[in-house]
Image (cartoon, rainbow, N blue to C red; front, side, top):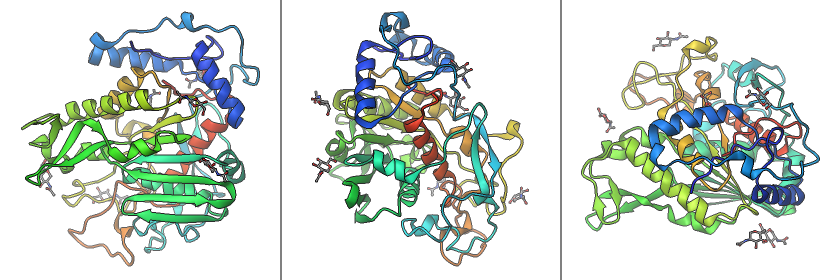
Length: 410
Ligand SMILES: *[C@@H]1O[C@H](CO)[C@@H](O)[C@H](O)[C@H]1NC(C)=O
Ligand SMILES: *[C@@H]1O[C@H](CO)[C@@H](O)[C@H](O)[C@H]1NC(C)=O
Ligand SMILES: *[C@@H]1O[C@H](CO)[C@@H](O)[C@H](O)[C@H]1NC(C)=O
Ligand SMILES: *[C@@H]1O[C@H](CO)[C@@H](O)[C@H](O)[C@H]1NC(C)=O
Ligand SMILES: *[C@@H]1O[C@H](CO)[C@@H](O)[C@H](O)[C@H]1NC(C)=O
Ligand SMILES: *[C@@H]1O[C@H](CO)[C@@H](O)[C@H](O)[C@H]1NC(C)=O
């Protein structure tokens, strides 16, 4: 029933189905895929066997061996682009901090008064290779006639605005309705949209007006975008705090509202609902699915609602041993991804964000912010320009890789 599609072009060749899909995709959009991630197998084996051994069966990779090697892919030059470090680079940021009108006020740290600008000068450097700079012209050409849709929480809004900033020299029209955003590039007939769905599954109001979360139902508006060319999902932050009312009378399946459910259990159920939706609705010949990993928060001395701060952080973590650990949430995600039919590209940016305690809006989430005791600081979103730019660079790299980075694809 489930496949682990650990497909390594250099060692094993992909399945006929995958080859077909990949070939079409390459032809259609001149993208080159290289799917290769040896260490994934080990991670999955251990995660899978501890969490869901009874559901899990591995495909025999050899049964997927096809006869031809995709010609344009170079061998043995792959690397994990998500494993790396931040290096100081004076040519950064990629756009001036006052120059992009698409950054919302809450992320406009410079405009809100932040003047320590060292945090703008870091570039993500994978340990095993270099990744290309984001080439806006090339990206825009690739997106011609296409739709790219972000689905998720405000961290995806952070990423979406960063992408629009990268492409801002191409004339775009902005449309916004509530929490839905659309950017349309007329000359390229390209739209980039954002659907706000922080849990990915449907938030729901019962007749008695109490809000619940339908763990068994995908957020409704997404069905309109299932045929987008690119879907970039995320979820995470809302499963962690009071947004889920500590799991009390909040999680609903069918008509049943559970009076208490562990948030981790609910998260797994919701992700399975998402995975099932993707497997059922997404046409992988047309649509490339991405999932962006969890971005770390850096509240110090408290949490977001208990006076946690990050305003005095001006440089990244340098000692790797001090990085926050890879969250259980993402281990669960990896397990769910591994059980899907659809190949999902996992933008595994979690570790890269663990370093960047210096790059959150903190007190600069509002214009003219002053340090005030008891004022909420934002140590979970990111200033723009900033860290989400690197997510788009990694997205770009994974779309345009001709050297063959080890792609984390399930
Ligand atoms: C990437 O793949 C190559 C070839 O399969 C392998 O030698 C290398 O160790 C991989 N790199 C990482 C970081 O996993
Ligand atoms: C614009 O792109 C959409 C797909 O995103 C396509 O359906 C439509 O026909 C295109 N329009 C033009 C004028 O090319
Ligand atoms: C969030 O939950 C914690 C306990 O889990 C509680 O102490 C805190 O007061 C809650 N905050 C809000 C704003 O409800
Ligand atoms: C999937 O998408 C391709 C390319 O757009 C199209 O040719 C094909 O008919 C679609 N398949 C289904 C089942 O809709
Ligand atoms: C920032 O403040 C926290 C407590 O508010 C303190 O623990 C930390 O050492 C400070 N960091 C710097 C770089 O001053
Ligand atoms: C994602 O990154 C984390 C942290 O570096 C790592 O532990 C994990 O194995 C990675 N997952 C995959 C599928 O590469």
